[in-house]
Image (tube, rainbow, N blue to C red; front, side, top):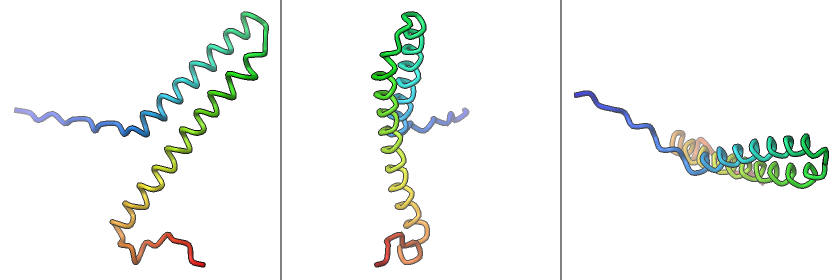
Amino acid sequence: MSRVKKKPKKEFSKLILICAGAVTVLVTAFTFIMVWRTNDLSPLAYLIPAVFTELGVGTGFYYSKAKAENRIKLRKMYGSEIYNDTKEM
């Protein structure tokens, strides 16, 4: 019998980032096509900033979460007395 390795389940934060990126690409492509067909640039002022803001928020959330997780991993690996990331005043 061969043992089949299961793929690790994708983290929810990565799923959010992937979905936000996909929506951004789709809306941008749709906007460019509609601008080309209608010769009207007004959708660029509303749709493009909205989806890129959403992508920016999703990316910021993902990096903030990854930073917190990495701090926890480093404290477990090196101990709290060696890895001290608090700012001294």
